Amino acid sequence: MCKDCGCSTALGNIHGHHHHDHAHPHPHDHEHVHPPVERKTIELERKVLAENDAHAEANRSWLSQHGVTAINLISSPGTGKTFLLERTLERLRGRVSCAVITGDQCTDHDAKRLMGKGAVVKQIETINSCHLDAARVGALLPEVAGNGVKLLFIENIGNLVCPAAFDLGEHFKVALLSTTEGEDKPVKYPTLFNMAPVVVLTKMDLVPYLDWSLPKCREYLNMIRPGVFVFELSAKTGAGMEAWIEYLEKLVKP
Image (cartoon, rainbow, N blue to C red; front, side, top):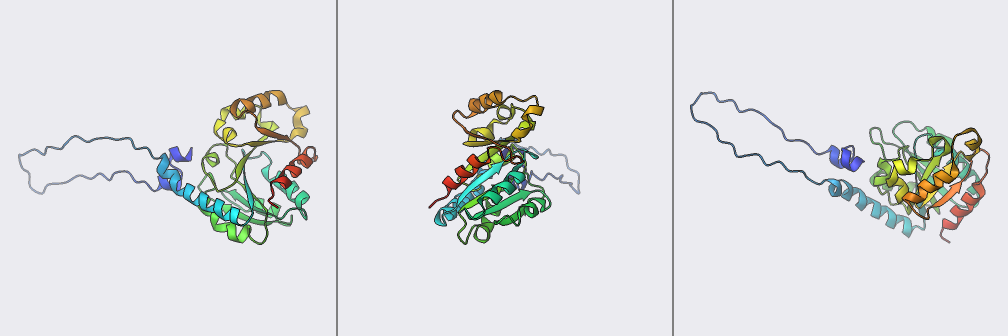
């Protein structure tokens, strides 16, 4: 993950030792005796995540004070997060005041798709980073989630690994898994599916055309997180959407 591989801000700012040679202007016959170099392995995970976690707690406090419920949507690219959000915003329009923060490395394509659906929408372009972080999300909260917003969707960058490690201050994570990805993603990428109490199975309309097993998928999900709450839906046909919408409405604080 980012906390291990070095693509996060904290690790990216850690520099290696600078080595250089000392040239003596005059030769001499004595020897330099250098003490043995002690090599240490330093645990960096706490340092990498500590600053982000502090921002995340500040975000959570802000959201609670303003009565906003925030969910962090995480999935692979192409799972259908944006399309599901389009259909979700359309159904919640006039029923629940919503806002969206959507992340991508480049372009504002997703934000443009979501505009005009009755919600405030802001895009974060992370450029080289493979996940959203709490500081960037927090900077947008007063602008996006003020003025009576009750439900905030944070659409993370398409990635099953790094976004799972970074708390954004959300109330909980929602993992999306499409039928086109196969049944075994939960056991291949267990961190996300262990952390997400809710999983949305998307593109269920494609099941008749795929070699895909719902019982096997549910078995894998329960192996990683027993009792996980699962929605089966198709944003394209609308099948299963009403249960999803009813669930979201129940999350909203009175």
